[in-house]
Amino acid sequence: MSELKSRFEQAVASTSLVTQRPSNTTLLKLYAFYKQATEGDNEVAKPGFGDMVARAKWDAWKKLEGTSADEAMQQYVALMTELIEA
Image 1: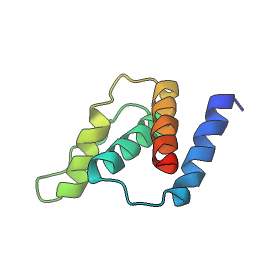
Image 2: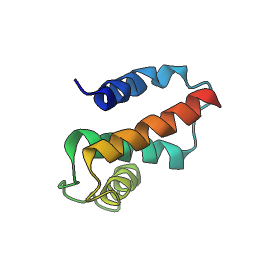
Image 3: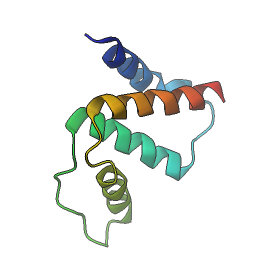
Image 4: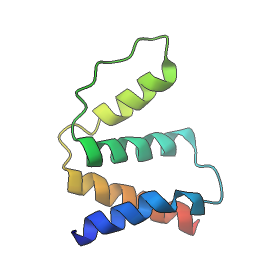
């Protein structure tokens, strides 16, 4: 397993170490980085206007289209490190 993949998995497992609830914007970034790192580009059908949460998540993930899995993992690890150290 690559070092980056290992650090990513550790960051995912360390979410319980975050002491304060992140903002919704930060949570959306984490979600999008995770989805891009684990599934790649968003190919899921866009949710309707009735489900605002699903639509916000879909939009956040879609913005990362073309981002490599490695870059998304790095961004996820960096953001989780910031949250844990805060």
